[in-house]
Image (cartoon, rainbow, N blue to C red):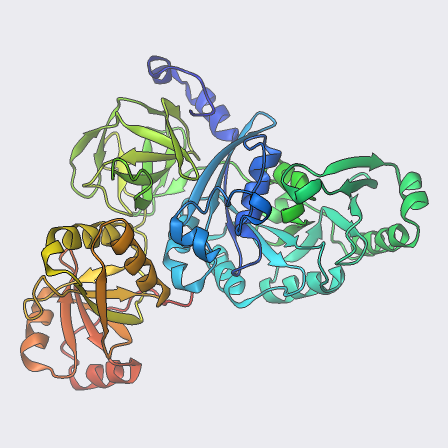
Length: 541
């Protein structure tokens, strides 16, 4: 159920002031990091602190604990990685917190990029021992491009790692943002005793709950009590805190929202330690939903008519019904169940009768929702990723970019008698963006080409085609590593007169030409200046 309790009949009477109040109660954030930094574990720990869970599991479900709630797919549970973004809606201190947990692996960058278009701020999670790893740096680049304020969380402080000041220096050198810690660790990495809260100088002492499945016990102390309890470790933390203040590294909200600073928190998410302060940070410092730019550059007010943009679709969340869920971020206005909206791409009207909120794989019907909320449209099969839905059908937010694929394989069913399941499965996976399905007259529909950013995407296809669609598949690697978009006219010319390339079409009628490498692209452009190639978004974001 939504965090609000109004009935559909009540939602039509919101004044702009009331709508601003509701929007002001929302915080919509994504969690990004390099693989294995603890993203999904942190997300679940946030849910535990928001009283949305009674117990937390973690990726491998050790000690009989359940797996992480956001890693609900079988393949995610088996491999211990997130392969698809997931959404949780939490309540904390009277605010509504929408958390998008994103895949960390580079092979799923496109899914993460789409999720970042649906949020207003980001938690950048880094490992206390490894610091700013490759994928974290790339994803930070996306945040910088979009101007998303970044909250930094140093995780795994209960394990051996680097010095806290050294990590801050690395964050600043890589991101250009001045770190302004809100909490500071007492005890070196691997000896995590508690946190100095820099705003008031107090101390929070933690005792891990057995198994780490419930909240850690917190004991709050004054500075004098902390000094008596922790001795030299407390004194070192105080000295470092004072050094930070002398360096101008105290939090300033305006500087944070202007993308010049990043508040920093220290946690041990698997032990649910330091996570409460991160949840407070989301409410206290992360921005609320605001006016957004349309594709034409004009701003659309958050208090205007209802608009939302689809950033993800997912099948298989309810295996009993095989339905499809389109995730849409509300940008403006009020959603109420039963309203009629139009899709900007097709102009087609649809009545939003079956709309749900999600909590990992669990879903519940929602009657009313506001800017910042993420809603799931059930079986809206004519809606594509990137579409804007609105009451007028005339609002369009900027299209979501398609990443340049680097891996190409033909695919065919193991059992030729499973053709119907084979085609249905590929249609669903293409709509989700798991892979892109390309076809041509020369290859026919029985052996299409799949394009992907990373090779792990093919593992997802194999797993889901076998287990969800009951049609195991065989792949054949193709000798291409890059693609460009071409017009229909140029595609026809290239099919008939250019060797060493392959020209195919996606389900939306866009033509792609495949090349063996970038050198071949440059050679082609030199030899055929009359044929225009359009580049896609670079894979390394």
